[in-house]
Image (cartoon, rainbow, N blue to C red; front, side, top):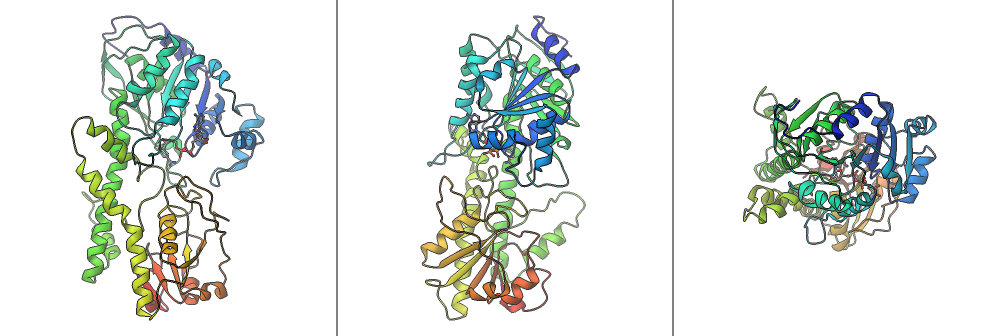
Length: 466
Ligand SMILES: NC(=O)c1ccc[n+]([C@@H]2O[C@H](COP(=O)([O-])OP(=O)(O)OC[C@H]3O[C@@H](n4cnc5c(N)ncnc54)[C@H](O)[C@@H]3O)[C@@H](O)[C@H]2O)c1
């Protein structure tokens, strides 16, 4: 590894030995959409994994070998619990027995759309009293560049142990040069690149980016992740790893905004934007397809770019692409509701008092995650205009209570009779289980935000694409 290490590091060989013999105990903090699959991945690779969470209900369920995330089968959890390779706990004192601690807690925006790092800070505060010499701590939560060094490191150093910030260089595969002081513990950032429900790529197949506070930290994190992931890629600092993740999500956010804006223009010009994207996709280089929709959803794309916007202010730097993309994407639910108004108007009806059925609550198809889902905003706007709104989603028997939304609604059945009862049906999420032929056949009016009805031949006059 390093060619110019100025002080020989003692903690690294001991950590490496624990990894090589797979006797390292791995602690995962935050057993959500990211932390749970990660915990099961390391358990499957033969490591003893402890999952830490504040949510007692989740911990009790997981300890019984039950799943609370639909795409993670209970048998996968039960197998690991039975083989004593995975345990879930709320007892943070057990952190002192871990060799590696991976942090996967939420990083939302606060009501002023500024980074809410309270979960990350709270977790670092919870680790500090139990931190041991030689332990590796890795932050996986998506955040602005600088968080690991400026927020997590000082809290962990309250323990009295030190992890000096030292520069190193890397070609992605190994550390090519480094200058280092003795480090007591190891600290790195490695972004989670989970895509829930993606059947093409599983967690371990997506290359793991790693940036350390110093070379030993990067090296230790690389040694750990290489046991469970097919490939790893080193960058020269925690900040570069943090920025990599933000770049990936900003790239999606900006490109989705671009196609959303083009969709609005195409609608006015009478051009089918989905046809245009399919045609552009035939170019074998220089074009990646993104698709328009009712707005952005999920825990990442609508939120993460604004972490960077906030940090950029410290450098007097306006992130104009992000701001503009945010403006366009967040206006899409208003566009959907305006389209419902227009469609009803053409039938000499108004939205006030109209019965509207929203299909799909999840922020994207075939998953049970409704965080930041545009469907919620669409329901809120429709209700605000006096519409009587119901919804259907096979993944949500009722709308969960969320930070911003408190609807008291249960998913209705999707029978032909029920579909025909509504003045308008809005397709907000294009779940694969929906029978779009039947929906169009039985509904009076269909407002399709996802081009989900593209293959439907009959009754096309009932369909308004928006
Ligand atoms: N969901 C995704 O698709 C995805 C993809 C890539 C990155 N990320 C990032 O990963 C991070 C986690 O996201 P998620 O989707 O897994 O969130 P989540 O809400 O599904 O899970 C977070 C878990 O952390 C627990 N928690 C909160 N504070 C805690 C604390 N102080 N100690 C212990 N547990 C605590 C919560 O109870 C919850 O179980 C976020 O930064 C997110 O941006 C998410």
